[in-house]
Image 1 (cartoon, rainbow, N blue to C red):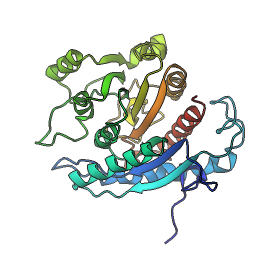
Image 2: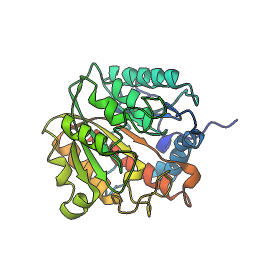
Image 3: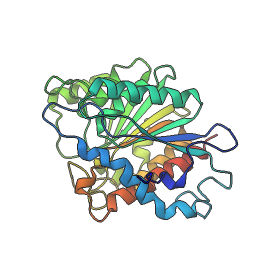
Image 4: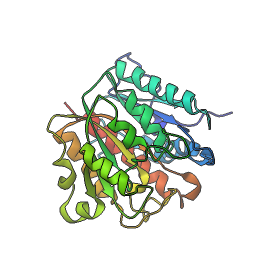
Length: 303
């Protein structure tokens, strides 16, 4: 069996033995609801890595999103560590392995970048920062994900921001791109506001620019970003389970990332909820790969 290509052709370790600035790794499954089949999400990491291959020979070329080559003229300082071993319905085991991998990357003093899976993988990803706080969370999502439980499962894809609010190392959160309707009821909205979450709707970003969200992040804070692909308009990100019109544009996403890198410090990043079975002509996979490239370039440029 031929090994799948790595993201942008990155190595699994740096040849000179130095510490990478960022480590990418995937996860197919988090905590699945009893009556749900999350197997489609497990295809996301392979699709994104495959989509990145067209740019793999170009990482030393000028990138107009970043204002220079990906690594700013420096040697490659990012590795692709492959995928965490996960299995649908092994909810506890999946969480333990994702958290452990995140802690391992942080122990290297590298920035963890997790991709793949549904929003439930965000919970163990954030838990992995327990010894690295305080952190702020910027959630970029169409939905607030504040359900306490669904079908008895408290760690599923409807609950990551509720669980984050209970983590002592999370100092605050900003939720960006909100629109339309999701699983949140009035009680979840009230709970999130009582906690102090800052809501920034997609329409506010369209009207005011990304500063409407960035102003809520304290300058110099450590920020972990969780990007749900359904935050992005389905015209450019159709490969999601809940297509919702009126989403953020590609430019708004990369401006958020770049602006956050200037205002604060991106301490971690995840990209979740890409669902390849609903993609159209690999449009979503290409957009996701390009976003992750911007994330890497922004992290490399952080002081």
